[in-house]
Image (cartoon, rainbow, N blue to C red; front, side, top):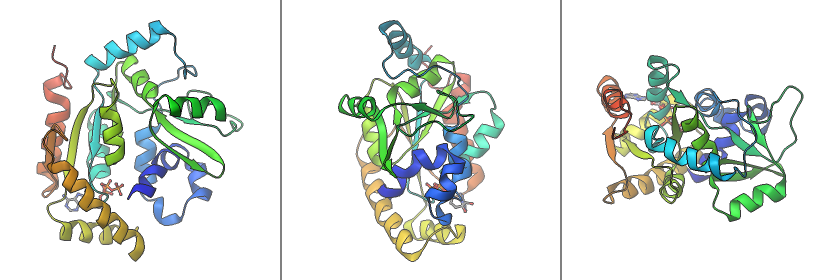
Amino acid sequence: MFYIRCLRTPITTKRRNAKYMFPTRLLDSQKIRSILTRSCVRGRHNIYPHMRIATMATSSVHKYRPVVVSGPSGTGKSTLLKRLFAEYPDTFGFSVSHTTRAPRPGEENGREYYFTTKEEFLKLVSENGFIEHAQFGGNFYGTSVQAVKNIAEKQRICILDIEMEGVKQVKRTDLNARFLFLSPPSLEELERRLRGRGTETEESLNKRLAQAKNELNYAKQPGAHDKIIVNDDLEKAYTELRDWIVGGGKFGASE
Ligand SMILES: Nc1ncnc2c1ncn2[C@@H]1O[C@H](COP(=O)(O)OP(=O)(O)OP(=O)(O)O)[C@@H](O)[C@H]1O
């Protein structure tokens, strides 16, 4: 569901924000989202990196290639990634989002968020600097391409859990990402899982199922993803996902 996916950045980034900004039913996946987006990196605000940093970042993503994990809501992405992060601590990094809201006491630039002005944010939007961005409560939030490169700079693999439009956007960048699509065994099973999770209203369930059809159609296009895993049996799917992402310790790097 596009709306919810757009919300992903702010939902996941700030637990305290999420509590009052979003309906309770959206918060179940928030725990995982915070895993995905919380920074392991304490860098400086770097919206306009100078050339040396930009060049280094580009070469780093060849060795520490970001992994884009997509798939319909309810397929099991969070479940599988949580397990992967537990098995491989200190291996993966999580991008820091940009926001135009003011920092709160205790918040550090580059840790909770990259704090920026509306003008700078919109300039970066116009330069296609964001993978995803959205507006909430008068503030902008977004995941920048540079924030993902910063993770590779720290010699970690950035995992991006994003929806179809984000996938397309990543393909337009020089992030050198690998694309993994997690597919449900069937739409009927997907619906069962979403209902079983107990997070959806009838309306949000229908929207997610409609969006699932779009994602599944996109996944059928040649070259849309590098790897497709059907999450039928959880153990089997996890082994397949782990083996593909870790790739014998190479994490997709060619050398
Ligand atoms: N192989 C599986 N068999 C049965 N249930 C599963 C399997 N994988 C995940 N589930 C269950 O399906 C539900 C949805 O999983 P999860 O929340 O991980 O999906 P998601 O893709 O991260 O969704 P969203 O994108 O909405 O966050 C959960 O209740 C989870 O326990």
